[in-house]
Image (cartoon, one colour):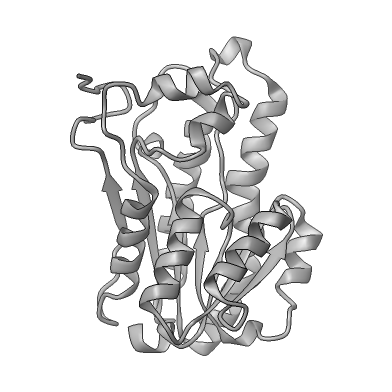
Length: 254
């Protein structure tokens, strides 16, 4: 099955930065026969990435995964019958406040992106994989989906939901040859903290002070490794942490 996956179309959501962007570059280099369909909200970044990868290898689709109608329109694009891999990478944390002080707008943004967006695109593309008996879904979770931490409340709740959905997809697709994997990182140096703190780079930088965090390519390599396992092997879940981080709260800083 890995050989068949490599000759198909790979959909990566949230491909304009972080794990999604790194995964697009790695797959373009390692899987020369695949086609990449890259989604994201930032048109200019998508165009730049498609140009880098090669217009003969990649297509960019600029839309917000929270928009159900846009997702459904995307899922009707010519060539959808060739999709073999869906990498559900789009997601974010918004704000970091005590539950009683948090912004409901931030909560809705996280729920709409991290849960509903993932549901929309998976529901749209998974039936084709099941009917063709070929496919692999990779869901980007988080250590926050295993252990909560102060002021992480609703972000953690969305990642607990991703973990539950990953397990449910795995059960419901049994017998279809569709594999389902969750990649759950700890502290990673991407735009994550900058987005969480709404562009406050001082707060964002403090998150990684005194520790060597994961890099986007560390996660991309784990995704690739999961995709390339033999057909009879499904990697259910991978938790990946920096060496100096044991839990969201237990971090050794130098």
